[in-house]
Image 1: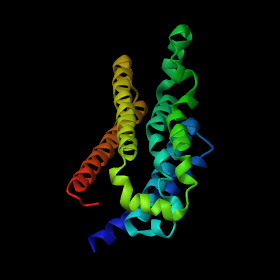
Image 2 (image 1 turned 180 degrees about the vertical axis):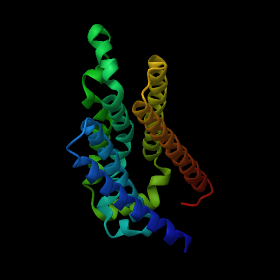
Image 3 (image 1 turned 120 degrees about the vertical axis):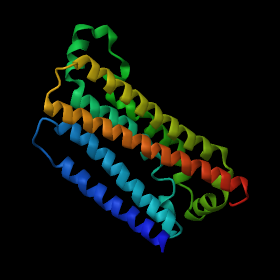
Length: 225
């Protein structure tokens, strides 16, 4: 009964994230249109993540095996999209300062697409797995992934990647607040609080991911897989 409730929550989370992402993507007006696009991309990746988890927990991956590991590259999108989302919201003042000191522009700020390189690279690495027959994918997921050092390494990279982005974003937000001093308007204060809460939510999700990862490794150590 409890498992069914969790599965229903995963499916509901997928539908809600997809709906909110579409709403933000179609919001053509407003000064935050560019920022909303990055936020919609985050919601789309979360939607697929919830849906993927629902398929795994319900066993539907055995019926549709080509979904296995299809969302692995999506986990490398949350951090970059959060970074670009903050850049679009509060980067105006920093962009003005960089115009005065162009030699200090970092490559990741000059070329935002570089942020998506880890996700693309992960997809390329997984491509040989994606073209395997469905029976081999199910066998890997059920019997082999727990003892595959590559799979464990990919999980660790996902944790480090998201953790690094969240840490950088939190430090950057604090620096931005400090530089503004007392000149924060009520509207800007709401925006900064929203960004802080979004980052803290990311840390919470990261913590949950770490707990699940540790429990998974403990289960393997006890011969549970």
